[in-house]
Image (cartoon, chains in turn brown, purple):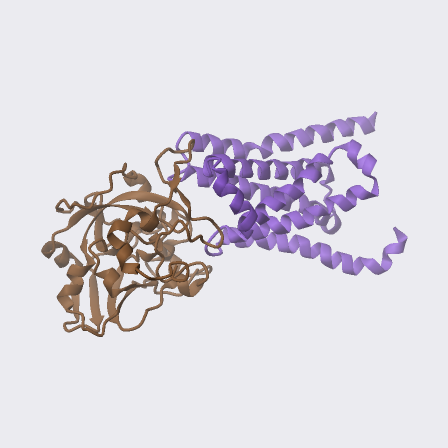
Length: 271
Length: 204
């Protein structure tokens, strides 16, 4: 990782940051293995540079962007966000990135575009979880957002954390961060973003639809079938003794900003 | 004289198994308390205890086929192995209640009651309690034939534990596949043997 030139932003959670060591060694990134420690251990062969990201579909100006050029052109902000995993643990992470909207604006979405589909790279030779036995899901990993969610100012494409470019295990060189949704929506190592008319598939939903929805909004009142989502354990907060367990907040604490996106929707049915 | 000496040796061997058997718990606790279990030490410790509970159940169930198929008699260790399984399950549950869930009963009790994943694990532990309580010589003598019947509960307990383990993760991983495979194998052995043996039972 190399240092990034960043600018401050108003988006800052006033809670202690999760230590960088924890943020970079406790990861769900099944392309590198299913264990939390696998991504940091098995991602050293991954080559995140040079990297291009194609934005196409229902847009006036489909384009392929070089990630380092985007980083040079767009102001990279610091965004300190809560990150709530569907497995009921959480972190506070200082991301560096830019609003997803600023990339979408460059390709000029057409009126018919209603959703945004994302796709992770497939490189079995560099990503050991994508080859061999026990592959948990079909590749590529895919995710999706409604267009208005994607254009929300909180939704960013992160290119770094803690002021440096993203480590491989965190989704280098560019990943999605949607802080009011469960972590699995934050698709990593993105190669393609397509604007589409109908709701695109997302990997975890395709794998186990009763447990993982399309929306995946953090919601303490809608439980995972196997565990409660009412509370969460903050990683790195109090170590071994004193669990650091705290109540989970509606929309992960971002209700003021995003609740209006879902006005009138049944959040139990659209989990 | 010879008999009592071998009984003494068996006793010592039993205690030896305990001492060795608790090493994973003690070392994992030590690592957790000193920052050696990574970013989520509570989860790591909790999972280690649960996994070893299942491992000791598997070892307990392996004693009989080892004797019948390979002629290796480790029967004298079975009680210690079974009790270790119970203690690990109890520690696993204790860590779940305390370090993990912070004794917040308002969320713990609904989880135990309503969520099959938690319910099954809890049920497995509950089933192990009468087995642990009746693992002494006095109970074996007093219960007679019923002791063997009672201790068949271990088959249900290990099945529940295996399903609980299967439900603990989002996708199947190799460690899970190996352990659950062993449980299926050991239970399958009993089923097959039961079917094969039944016709010639009169002799015994």
